[in-house]
Image (tube, helix red, strand yellow):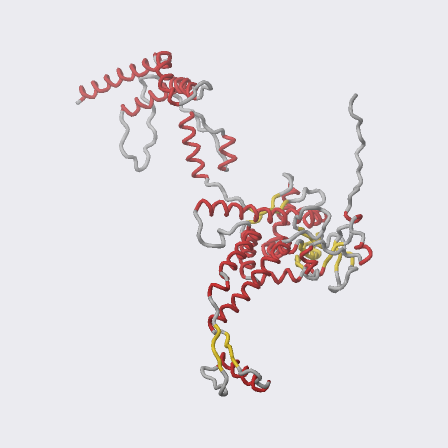
Length: 487
């Protein structure tokens, strides 16, 4: 008996609104489930302070600029004339909006978890034009239980206001689930490494102060009154700002020096957290630090390139399914929406490819098709007309003399051309038999190829080739005799 066919259930049954019940009581805007952000008060602006760290700033800027440095492309959504017109209009629009600067700001979705931009529209004749894209601070927005964007009028506003449709462009960083609309940004992962690094820098500064100016230790007689103790302390405090001090009789002062090894290796501590920050942001360390082999650097560079490409894909995909569709629906309703993307893959070196394909053609006897040549190298190509071989013994018509020719042609050159033309089909047959032997499935190793060729030699069709060469030799002999007689 076959399994019973179950009717698919079309509605959502595990919506996140059913899990976060308290959000409906506290306010319309959901709280963030980020445990790190919650532990520091829930203010997203605190993550912004991480960018003051020199290592965070450097690697984050490297990641963003690697994306914006790539050329952006607007391609039509189809082959129709209206599709191309819509793509041209969108391309002109983005050129006027400093698209790279917009992308650099919206890329902070990966840092904070999400990014929001307001779309400023204007009428341009009969069209709705995009006058500007203004990226807003993340702290001014939140999400309700349905994951819909809401605008806060002030930071303590937990109710917020619903935003108009097709007015805001939202980019969200990918987390490990779809229940949290906030996304998980790099700030979540960077908070503790930066915190520990900053505290290490503070202790390092204290250690440097200890070695540069050791602590002053003072001794006073037992039972000294407080006024005498305070006088001693005042004198000791003056050590840091004076080259000489005066102490009352009976008081003693000395420098308390720290042992250098007792403080630990502060520089190593800082390098460790700088490396951790680079791995979190860029996925590797070798494009930010010195000391690596070429092979290791290549692997790390590929890792960084993959992260940059993922950033570009996430940002432009959200733009394509949001603002691009809205604008196209208003202005070009019959057109397939265009697509915006970044050219991050390195362009292929066509010269190296042509050399490689020429070598393969010589080794295999194969040649590329006209379609392959047009797709890879572009342009318009047509097949060269095949030369008509002259009758044996007939001198072909001389070509127009070429400029800078090395030497004039003679009868022997013409004879060689005729032999090549007549022997071409015979040689093709010989090459085909040799190729079949080389690529035979039962040929275990190329070491066995010489013996196979010796076995093939008696069966090669050499009679026709021998006849052509024999006639050519006779003609060459007669031509030489005629030249000798004329001389």
